Length: 435
Image 1: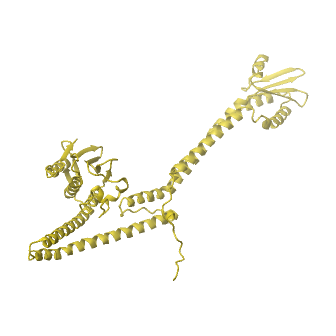
Image 2 (image 1 turned 180 degrees about the vertical axis):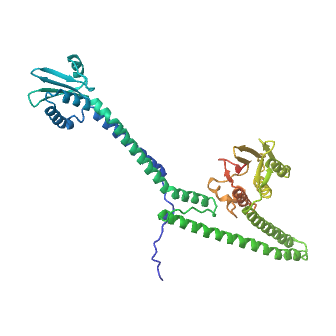
Image 3 (image 1 turned 60 degrees about the horizontal axis):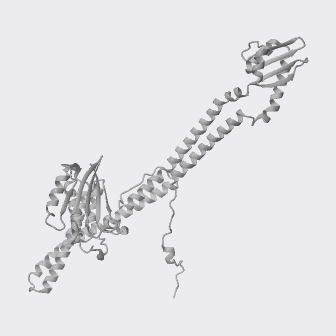
């Protein structure tokens, strides 16, 4: 006996691990970019405050003294040079010699002793010696120097923010194919295997997109071949069924004949349903859309259900509501949904409520029954072909094709269909169609 060397997968390994909900990649990029921008702004504010305060005092002290000494050696007792330096560097300058003193302001105007006293309390004062024993006092405005750097600081911040915005936009453009792939996976999960994602790059994400398109193409072809096979088999079964029905006429009446007749009728109904599904599939590929008054159509269809239990109650119906749709497909859709609600109603169920309303560019049809309801974990499966739910909840009749046909019709009209099942009993089907 040979033993398979493949890894044995335990029951716990077969179960999918619970994944905690995380932030999306785009939100993470947005958050990191916002944090980076905030850090840049905070650093700019800190730098500005530190520059205006005494944080850089030690760093500028020695270079400032060396500059003042150099300027003093050039000024000496030269009035014109002192005036030029005061105007060029926007400062107050005082030169004291044995003969007296002279001073100039930032505009080059001569300054008196009173003006110098006012500036001494507001400006920073640096005393240096001239080449011939002159005492030169330089009054510098530190705040003015800080203000002169504001345009440079603002320009730097703006440049950094623009750079961050460009990088963020580039990151979003790189992730756009990933969002297309996510939307494609969502569409496939809803049963739309005709979905294809655009391929704009040949990187890793582009290769995944190509693999996705290849997969959906093969799955779509497999499903199409399967449906064609079912349609062909159903069509071919009509001939032997007709011969069986003729042969039944020659059998003597009795329980055996009645049993075979019931089986033939059941098989004939199933074949008719399969052929109707195939007809709907072909027509849904290119629906013939015209203007249809949905209110009139619903009233015509419900007229045939008024005598059946539990009855129909039209609530909130407008006087008229025109939409662009294929009338034949739309009639099959409404007929199947109402028939499904009647079929699964209970003896004590309240009348089936049907409402119709328009919200902007969408039309919403709601059919609310009071039947056994649909389990929460089975809501998505009811639209799959040949799916019949738990018989203990009353889901015995039918072949599991009606809701699948309804989904095809809704998808052909670019709409959506979903079930809402309350906690106790009953189910509500909501159909949304473009107006």
